[in-house]
Image (cartoon, rainbow, N blue to C red; front, side):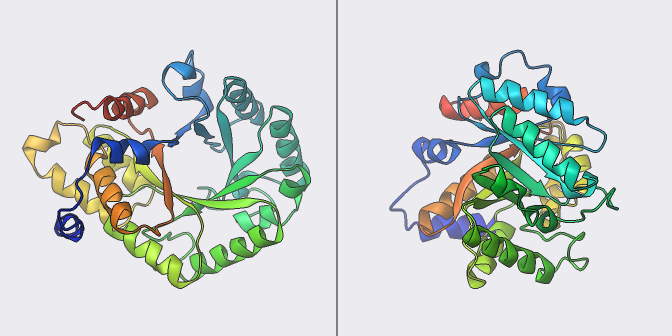
Length: 304
């Protein structure tokens, strides 16, 4: 709350948070789906603007045929499919190249490259840099690669929630981008308050890392569902926002929405013109329809 008040003070009452500001930040938002949930949506065009970037989560055990089929549907409907490439579930170079070729055959030229949630590699790869080093994404003319950003750290990479290994990996990716024609952007894990986002972007700037940033947000969901996924995904100190809300019985039955965090990000960008935050990325933990309905309410200037 104190940080939000400080943001508002810095505006010196010359500007106020407007509906136009909110809509501007939400232009070109992205969202995540899984093949199983995507198969239940008859027409993505009825719930998402055309050209939306739709990330396709690749969980261990999901057949590549399901992933490619989902990407094909999205591409043909006028969207930008962004399939996940989780390094630890890819067995070898042959399989990796086969995946890439299959995606390119349906028009995909962008991807999210991550280590993945598996604790142990199933094959030859354990991190995103090993996949990028193969040269396959240049070979098959990918134009943009999204990599994970961690405003609250990542214990898989830095067990002490530090940043040494994370920063080293980002510097490697900066060099990769400079040596290829592939754009590198960062899409972050979701968190629940602005403070770690601001502090993280400052640290990136100090390390001369100026990637375009897409801030991950959890879409509307029941509070119990949100807490479950937050713990499962390793959300850091900002989890206290949910814990505090859970103690308030008047709030317990209401679904969580990212309304306040969106407002804080808008305010932050208004007073930090050099911020590299470009777009918002939504994890629809309460269902994709709940998230898109919430976003349409903002677009239509409804009470959200």
